[in-house]
Image (cartoon, rainbow, N blue to C red; front, side, top):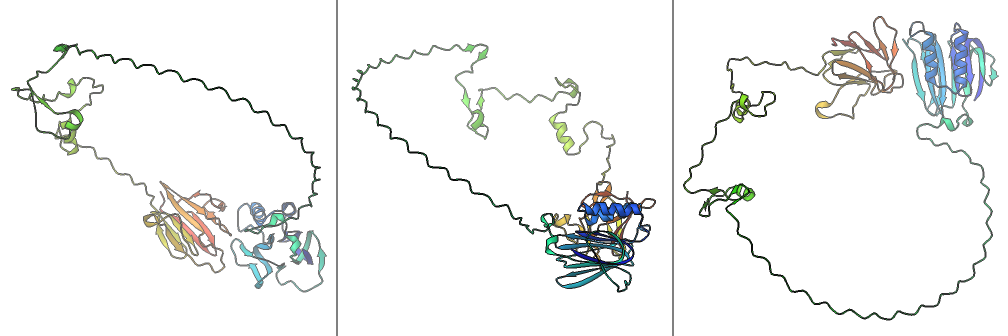
Length: 416
C-alpha cells in the first residue's frame, strides 16, 4: 500500500494489511500489543478482542477507535467514537462513523481500492509518506495495490495462482540393445494312446429286508387302536399339525380350572397371573379388590415455559425455536416444527438476515449467534457484558438481555 499521514494526536498503526487508529489516551501497553498482533498478520477480531479486554468488558470504558483490515481485495471495517472511515470501491466512496453507537459499527466493502481514517474534521495540511509503524496523526490514507493480495488472502472461492519454478526436463535414457532371439524348443513326441479298461459288471441288487412287526407298546408309547375315526371338519391348524383324532365313544374332557396364583409352579416372585386376569386388567375390570384406589401419575410436560420480548414490540412464547433477524428463515424444520420467525428493522444493517436463534432444551433455554458479522452481546444484571461465540449455544436466565445491535434488544421473561 502507498500510505501517507497528517500529524495529529491519535495513535495511527500502519501495517502492510491494516490501518488502525486509537484515541490519544490509550495506554502504551495496548498500542504495543495492537502493533505486535497486526504485524503478525492479525485480523479485525483480534483488534476488537484487545480493546474489549482493556475495557474489562465495559462498553462505557471502551476507547474510541477505527480499524480497517484488508481481507484479500476486500476491506473489513470497525469504528467507534468520533472517527470516520472512508473506503473507495467499485460503486464509489462510502463513509462510516462510530458516533452515537453504544458498542461499535462494523462494515464490509468488496474490492476496495483506497482506504482512509480521519479524526473529526481533519484540516488540510501537508502529508508525509510512511511505509509502516506507529505515528501520532489526525488522518491516514492508503491506496490498495494488487501486490497487497497474497496467497493467504484468497477468500470466497478466489483461487490464487503462484508461479511454480521451471522444471528441468529429465535426460532421455539411451535405448538398451535388443536381446538376441531365443531359439524355439523342439516339439516333444506325442504319447502313445492308453487302451481303455474293460467295463466292470454291475453287482446284482440286494433284496431289501422285510420290516419287522412292531409291538403295540414301544418304550412306553401306547399306540391308538386301529378302529378309530377321523373328524371330517378341518381348520387352519390341520395343515400344520395334521387332522384331529377322535376316540370313539369318549366324551371330551372338561377344561381344568385355572390354578391359583400361589400354587403356580416356578413362580419366583408371586406375581404370575392367569389369562383371564390379564384380560380383565386390559378391560380395566378389577379382579381382586374392587374398592382399592388406583394411583394416578401426573403427566410431566417436556416443553419450556417463558417468553421473549423484543424491543421493537414483538412478544413470543417459547413453545418452540425462535429465529430473529432482518429476514429470518429456517431450512432445518417444516410443518409443526417450523420455528417462530421475528423480523426486525436494522437501518445500519448491524443485524444479519438470520441473526439469533433461541432454542428451548428441556427445562432450559439457550441462545446461538448464527455466525453474524457484527455479533451479539449478552447483558446479565450484576455481570460484565459477554460477547456470544458464533455458533455456540449459551444458557440464558430470566432477566437476561441480548443486544443484537442497531438498538434492538431481546429480553427473557418467566423462564424456569
